[in-house]
Image (tube, rainbow, N blue to C red; front, side, top):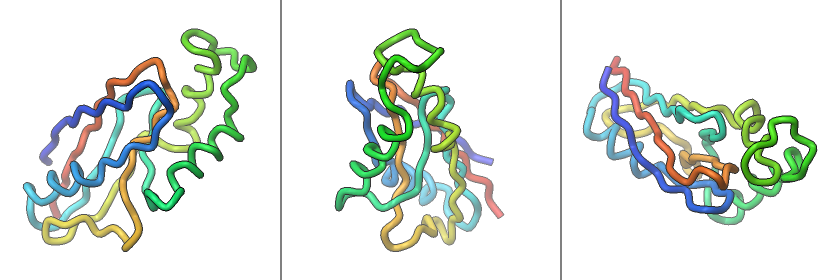
Length: 135
């Protein structure tokens, strides 16, 4: 198994950050067939496979805002207002995804991309571990 860590700066606002390019480059460097596992070792971030652009990323953030409002209801209350929701989000958007790789290329659908989902405005520096298990 080959593995690397990619560092991502998500900034100071909620974001759906496209990491498809990093995933593609890592898979291509490994070559062959296998499984790419994408994992964020953070309690407040997730990985999603979805269409990006065309409003889908904003729709995801809006849906998460409806499901997990940034208000004072959360028992986990340190950090910015509503920070506790960031700790609940990985139950809905898990911190991992596994993608088939064929001949060094991600076997994603036409409109699928890989994204880091981050609601935590208190921590803009993220790591994404990419691991390739070759078949």
